[in-house]
Image (cartoon, rainbow, N blue to C red; front, side, top):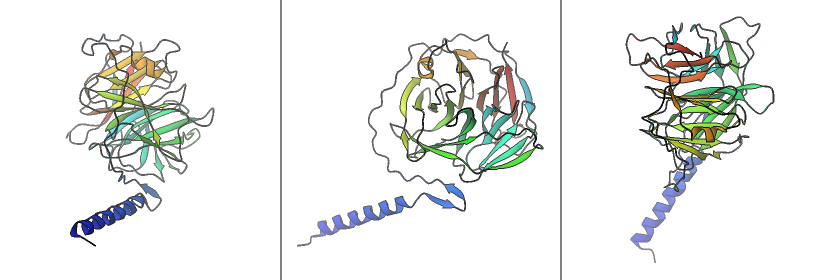
Length: 335
């Protein structure tokens, strides 16, 4: 005998079945560019345990390793208004990679410390959901350097997966600059947090282990997760907790090319870790950092990256919404 209650049950089950079918086909391609639309059903995550620090973050020493005043230059391209990252090339001396964040083109731009336009790299088969950071470092082929683009922004903490796009650095020697290059071969590394979605703007790649670190952007807190090498490019990887810091709204970070230093920044300040030889990144992040120079010259500073030769670090800024402000590249020289 069918009752009104049983009819309702059948209707609900049918609705759930339709939802699952729609979810399977929700990640589609628009032309040749992957359009990422995450419809993962978020369930209550299990409690994730992080190693935590014991120092007082309001009582840090200031490092004397870098000049307090940066060399600042305007970007020659005034159309780049939402710059969110900076990384130094390992194969093209003096070159820097930068990019815009959400809603912008799937392009990485090449500049240098002077802000000159050196070219554009078009990632032909992936989109820009919300690119928030960029790094350079080793990858699957020994002796090659790779660019890592972090599609990890998630202001509403709603995406079940985030993505890191990895491709081999192009060699620019002998090319007429500025150059435009299509990057057709990109490895897509899909990552998941063990405790549910987070907003994040910080990507770091360990030059010694090839591990990928992502730091969440939260008020007075940053949870740092790691995806150990080799990262899977055929299915999603659940990251593991590395450390939890009392750091307010992290917007960028980097690991030095020799693995001896770490930088983490917000709009207001920069932390710097100098690691003793043999110290892992995860262990180093548990130690007490120092405050590094920041001239507070960026209206919405987001990017930070070590120079390829270790001679200092670069920062850059978003300027959309700040009339009269120009996008800049700042360099803090090591003493």
